[in-house]
Image (tube, rainbow, N blue to C red):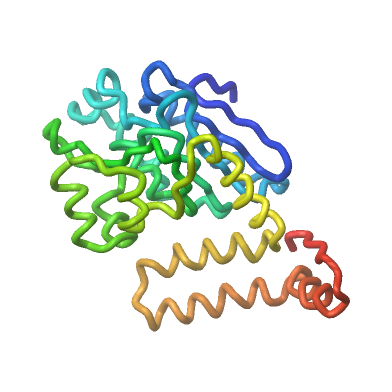
Length: 259
């Protein structure tokens, strides 16, 4: 697929995906949403990719849905818009590779909703976050009602959703929405360090950790324990699970094959 509204590159075991409508603050369109979903799925299927890094071109990470294109489709009940939003926000699709968000600037509305579908979130000190949808008479229907109260304390989730006010990167860190805030010029170096650390780990174990965690989130605790045990057995019997302890005993760096 030829990408126009995103940039999709691969190197050193990483897939890099960049929102690429800087003149519109990387606002989501039908095309951008479709391209983003395709790129994420391609990276997830690629055996050479161990980590996915998502960031934005220009001053913004993603300012949400394009008010001129997407919002009229949403308020008009166009099924294409709802299908694209569900795909972008990974509502019904699991990406097993870790996704690191490098939040280079404003991350608003649909941007904050997409952020909740990522795993590790590093923000520039310039970034702002928020779900301003109530200002426009709409709701954050990209997954925030479901994910946000599960990811941060309920009262903070409700303040962000009900007031529609924006919060700073420092506040987002305080409430637990992101992992770290760094000076803007150090953002990508910091993200690369996170990616390097994850890439050194056994890929099968890393992906299974994410899969187990996501699958268990919606289960009662007792049922989740059984799922965890069954899924863990798949990893414990792998070649990588034998290689890791052997390398430790032999005082060398393990060579993981992802199987």
